[in-house]
Image (tube, rainbow, N blue to C red; front, side, top):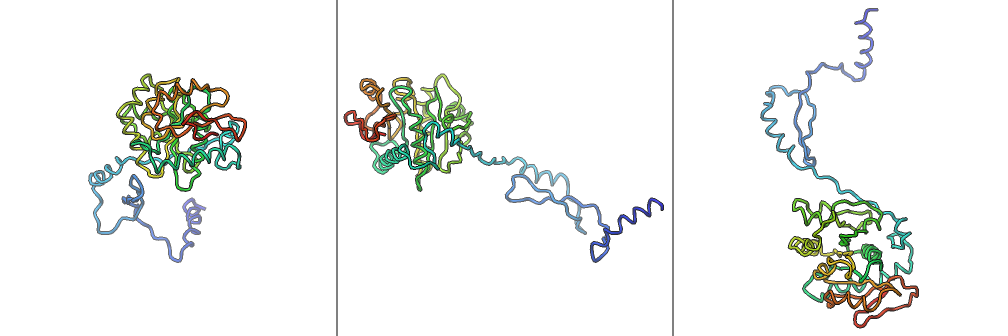
Length: 316
């Protein structure tokens, strides 16, 4: 059998698929169709329409190039927090049991949320600073746990800011990695705040990392750019509470600068370690009128209450 006859036999079953023989068609021309949801044109193949002239390549290029120049929006990356890592540190988790720690932060957040409706000053009451007199008193532990507890509220969202720019530790506490953050936005005006926010898989919790370490961090915190940023994050979402994990007041100058811009201040006190002299020296560096209360950390007795004069409003 000749080659042409074998080819004809192979093609024969294909012709039987339809009720009519397959008619030969002209090679398809490329027709431009724009998907309104896409950032670039979608090209589809269509038969050449009789009586219509072929498109001018120059005209097609003029219509396509502006579409190609549109920025393509990237989907926001969702950072998965390490629940097991958090539990090992004693930090509460959204799915956790009704523990003593979880109940303690429920009580603490109630007073903070109540103050949102009765601000003590002109400063935004939804900007909440978590600080301490000395390092090692557990302010990051308290900042993260408080933020997660508020995120469990039905009508609140939380932005957790790692403002301890010299020794950032919030991403590590959550078990996630972050590069750029707060300081990068202040240094480079081309970087937008939304570009450095880290959305987490805890639905209502977003993280703003500290960012690249800068030698003039204190001056950046006191700058007009910082004040404008604070105003934006305080006013952009009415249901947002912003928790700042700050450096210790007696260890870094950034803490006092931040405290002067916060509507609420919570001072973490380590039970059995922080002296009254250290605490009073720390409080002397800030405006105590905005101090919501002292948060006793690492206390063994669940009923224990620490009170330092008029500032002792709650304890953990």
